Amino acid sequence: MKKIAAVGGYLSATSGVKTLACVALLLLLGLPAAAYAAPPDLRTPAPVIYLADNLDEQDGLGWCIDTRGRGFSDRLHAHSCKPRGGDVQFRYDEAARRIASATFIGKCAALLAPAAAGVTLGLLDCAKDASGQVFDYDGAAMEFRPDGDKTLCLVAGAASRSAGPYMSRGLGLAPCASTGAKFKQWRIKKARP
Image (cartoon, rainbow, N blue to C red):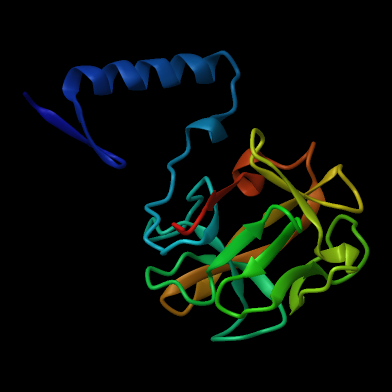
């Protein structure tokens, strides 16, 4: 049987044609193309929080929350998910409702200003009374929303740029209603107990 290469494996020629026909039909019906974008080839060890869509990451590695520069930084951005992990490894603490670094113990993602569109994030000491560190994760929508404003979502920036052998883009808050799913849908991969 003739095989057609596909993301994540192979499809038979017949099923490949059927899949393309279905996608074309759904697009003609006006359904968003973002629902059919390629997922990343995630190689980062858990725990990790990453975008469900690979966007334009050149090596298919996906986009993770990351500290700016090499090693520790008090500023965060979205970055190619690194196969060896390190500063791109974050976990979601459901009980505390915090996005915590798995590499820099005791450090949490925090809004650098009150919740508003355009606000960016830093990596600060985790604190129980820090409202800027509280995020709700909606598993069905795959969205992180800050405690201060549920109309806002944690999003990766629209433009990417070179970051050595990898790529990076902004990370901040934007209105959920007007932001494309591919920039705001995050997956959580937990470490095994």
